[in-house]
Image 1: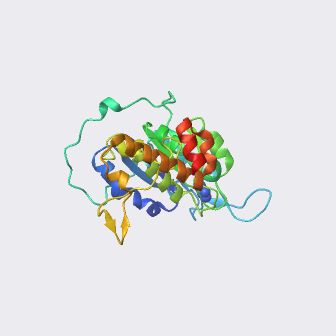
Image 2: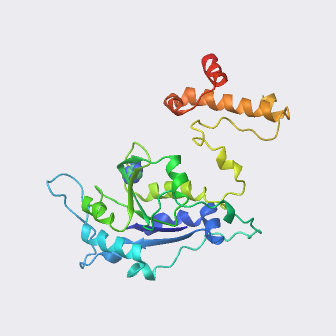
Image 3: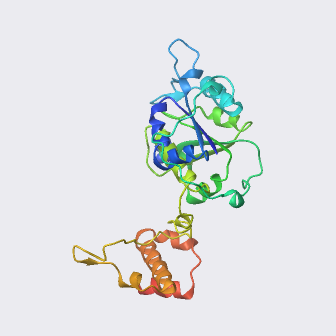
Length: 276
Ligand code: ADE
């Protein structure tokens, strides 16, 4: 997968080189280009923003800067062609990898256009289902807005070269899209086959079955007089799985009850919830 990020604070994206994403870069599963938007600013001050039409506080990012920047990143031309890819921060020892090519599936949307993700608090909520779908993409471009956002015509115009998605990572306002990109990129990249060591670990993620994941435990069996639930030591796989489902149901009911409306509940699930 290829990720390109456009930002006026390229150093903000440095975490993309670390940990899991850094490993994906080393394994050639991922390549990342981070581009300083000011390269496309043409005036002497390299300004990227201007006052909003209609008045009001803050500044709006200029279409004459964003338009050519997105054209170049889509086509790999201009300053985008000269950008160096991010290198992994901490080269890990490469272990032999299993071949995941058999598990790769086609992108759900049958289109050669790259996906443009524009993080904005005014966007659609980003979900695990989006991450699962976007993990199958070949080329994703992120446009990081600052100030009061990007002139809306940029998003309209970009639809000629991209499939555009405006997304929010939650009901709060950040200073810019960079941190949202880190969140979205990590959620996507960990789902690419070969990135996580243990494939089962994301099949059991919170949200994958519409429920929050229940609690987890490791050794020692007793810690500060607190015991691991004995059922986990039973060795009975079916009983353990049932217990995990019950815990997931009860946690979801307690913390995010609205999620239960989207879950297919068996009569046994329902009775666990009624008792809980
Ligand atoms: N930019 C500013 N706030 C944001 C949010 N909540 N989600 C995505 N991008 C943002």
